Length: 275
Image (cartoon, rainbow, N blue to C red):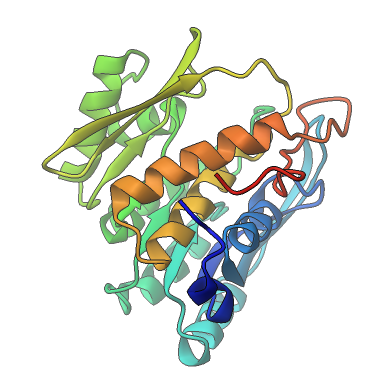
């Protein structure tokens, strides 16, 4: 697949990311921007929170006001006409409600919901009282929701560990209102990473070798941003998911090795061609 097609260079699709800031540059809105731009899009942003974090962990989280979040989204939607959007860290209930209200006005906008709840180091990135609002108000707006195993467990209220669990969770999430669900297996065990996509009619597995690396900070943000970019570019869901997963794998392989803990991905892919 040629991701450098002339039409995309001449008019890059506009992708809105609604997410938090990662001072370490590996996840959050920073990872989203790198991904969107690398895959031929133009990044539009609405910042939801500021975090102080590095590869070792998160030392502080400061949510923005709901008014500030809504103003950013309104400014983008009123003038820049995004082709797709994604949500990441929404921090607290007031921000979740603000985002839900704005996105409810644009149901035609392809939306990827990455239900960011807990950082890899264990720090909570979504307050407990916001989980129900995310499930009830944002999830039904999703063209596709992309939880990891732990997030799928919280959203569905059932333990998600095995592949059978993943399938059931994906079907539950669609029954709860999402158009499709991609339940990721990266937090599982074994020699392969197995992700399952359910679109309400068809079940598809994506499997790849588990890469032995500690430099996996921001994989969820990266995948959802890549998926949103693909949908904005007009790829069907299957093709967009396949490309997003392959991009994450390539970015892990090209991780620069920064930091003493879970380092960032190599979003630029070095000199490797785009698939």
